[in-house]
Length: 233
Image (cartoon, rainbow, N blue to C red):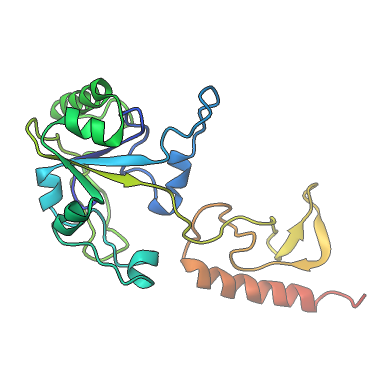
C-alpha cells in the first residue's frame, strides 16, 4: 500500500497478519489459512480498509506490472475515484455501513479499528508487530512508504477493496542439489536428471532472488556442465 492509513481484515472484520511485513510475491501464505471447523478460508477474500487520507495518498499500490496493467492495459486512477464509481472500491460514511458492504460483523470491524488506533497512538502494533518506519528502499522506484502505519480517521468516509490471491508465476517443483541434480524423496540424486530456473528453485516456494532469469542462467550452466560430465547410458 502507498499509504500508512490502512489495515487488512478478513471476512470476520479482523486483522490476520502484519500487512506490511509480508512480501507481496508470497502474500498467499498470509491468506491461505483454512478454518477446518467452518470449512472456509476466512481471508479469501480479504479487504483493504482505509480512510479518506489513505485514498488521497495515491493508488493502493504501484499497478505498473502484472496482468491488469501489462495484458489488459488497465491503470488505476490516482485517487481511486474511477474505481469508486465502478464499484471496485466500496465507499461508506461509517464503519457500520462499510461492514455491511463487505458482509463482516460490524462490531468486529469497529473493535478492530478501535484497537488499531489505540495501539498506533501508543506507538506499537501489539497484534502483529507492524513497524512504524520502513527500513531500506523499495525495489520499485516511487513506491516507498516511509511510515508503515497511522491511525484511521474517527470520521468517515471509509473505503474497502476486496482482494483475492492471484497467480504471479509458478514456484516450487522438484528439489535439486548444488550440481542441479534432481533429488528423489529420500534426498538422493536421480541419475541423469537435472533442473534449472523456476523448476525446483533454490528459494523453494517463494519468489526467486536476483530474478528468475538470473537463476535460470546460473543453474542452466551448472546443469549443462553436470550433464556433460555424465557417462553415456
